[in-house]
Length: 217
Ligand code: AMP
Image 1 (cartoon, rainbow, N blue to C red):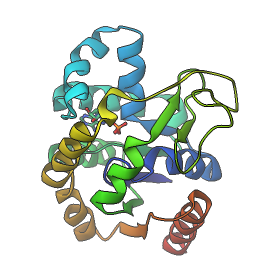
Image 2: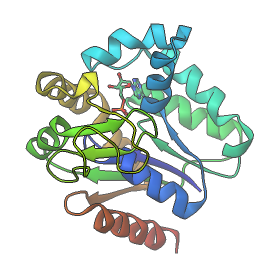
Image 3: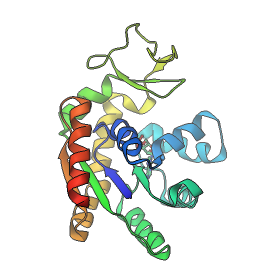
Image 4: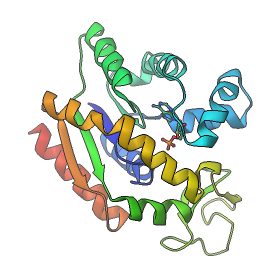
């Protein structure tokens, strides 16, 4: 199964992507995670992406598209994948469609996580990530037992540079301008499914899985 998750920053794509991919036994491919890993390990790709990410802008298409195409060509993605954070604009969506067509395949479904801007700011400004295992916490909604430490592995929690309120607002503008047009693009193809992404995490996952099952029947 080939799935794309789309939604504004803070819609919970990363969290849901993890659950859905594991339910479906397909790899989760998150462009944000791949970029962050490259930034923290200081690779050439990380150097190219860093400034854009800090501002909350999209990394240029030529860099992003080449990275995703290489990832999708790996063995574990041949039987299906879940893309989280890609595509983010129409050129990326069009090149993805072309690439899959060359491989005689196509996307099965695009799942849109729907949530409003104020909720996004509330969520993202309290988000903390574990430096060691990557688990996401929230200072209000899902606080760890010990402040600043991950309950799962004891790792240090940090706030992403792009999770300050000003950058969040900018990322929302970028989403509205560049990513929102994908909703109509995939609705035209008849593969778009929107779900309400507010409420407890498990309920959103249940909604997502129910939508995926309905769509596949
Ligand atoms: P995310 O974790 O998905 O919010 O992504 C974090 C940052 O990585 C974004 O704000 C962009 O700077 C960059 N990024 C992630 N995915 C893409 C993409 N498909 N195209 C361009 N930039 C991206």
